[in-house]
Image 1: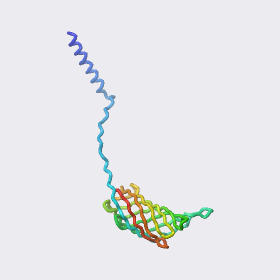
Image 2: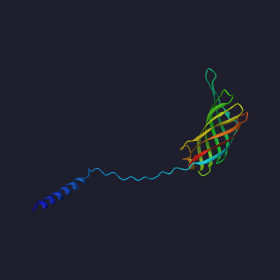
Image 3: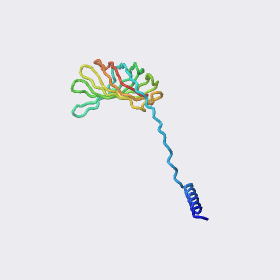
Image 4: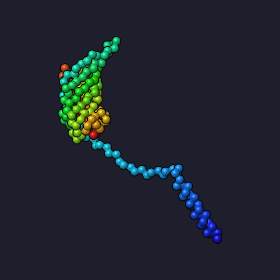
Length: 180
């Protein structure tokens, strides 16, 4: 046997050893190729709402020794028309401000229809401030995951402005964007 054929046999034997060694059960699997699948993000939809609310039910205030008070309230008769159509029930609290107005926060549960999204219920939070003349303004936020049915993935944010009557009933116009 010449030296070339001897080296050929050694090469074939080496390849067999490598092949057998790599085929054992304890061999580490190769990393799988990953593919990038784009996630679909819902397009933002502009919304407007006309909101009409009756006077709230005031509950017992919580006051400190110096007389600073927070006034809890609830509403069960708020009507919503426009891009969102339905009603809300809400509860919140507010405190008087130096300008004879108030600032507060409320939690609303909306039941109805959102144009382009569907029907169900969804919760939103609202931060409100008013002046002594009955002008009211604020922001609203819907967090994804607070809804049911077709509104289960609804999220959004916006602002509102309106006017309250002496009994705290009134109307406001809200604008913003939602995603569903």
